Image (tube, rainbow, N blue to C red; front, top):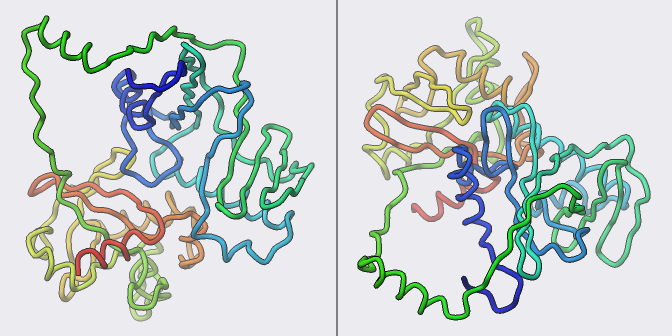
Length: 349
């Protein structure tokens, strides 16, 4: 409808929402993970771009907050580090949402045509990385499955998307005057043009998975509560810290201390949770080990007895969670990218 050339324009957000509507998929757009949607055990990254010659590089990941991990390394070291980070985040996405497989659903455009096809979202085969080439600020390499390009100045990883022979093609007529067409459509149907009221998102807050005073995960409390001194503790004992200012700024967000509520996880499972400890400083599961098992084992992929560190959070690319209040008794939780809690804290104070 709106295009300045013969190549159709498709908004990436529209493509994501249409995909979810067409396939009754779960929309993961408000979750900071590597896919946009899920259908059962399949995670889907929805991409839309101009097809060009059918072999174009497209952005698949950004590593702006990880420069310290690779900035001093040679090209081989840079690619090794970026590949490890990429694989860790794909695997974390699968664990968070209980997914078995990941793929790209590509919607490409060329003159008068929109095409659609699916490609596997592969891990980087680190052991088979070869043909590393450096030109200006770009490092190109292959892994025997895909061809990649990493832009050092943008901290962005690209993959070459090769259009397969088998795909769906739809011819597109671009309307010369979309406003006239919309007006005619409304007049012919007898409808009146009305603008929908802005719908505010669910009430929500962010919580850190670390101590916001020191930007580290304490060795004997919070997510490492299982390692605290004193009594014997379960290996999965853990809690998410609730900074005191959260209760002052959002006094009615959580139920009173020790009152249980439903907490829906990203994979659809529901856990009974509550606010505990002095000052309501801890978000815990009703059965204490449930939260730790999910966070430490299922998501962080840590072995029993292995400490969670902030470095581990940086590798996965997630250091905080967002809690949505759906009703007085129903809440949901999801992971958010590095720096999300700090931004929320700055905006709230």
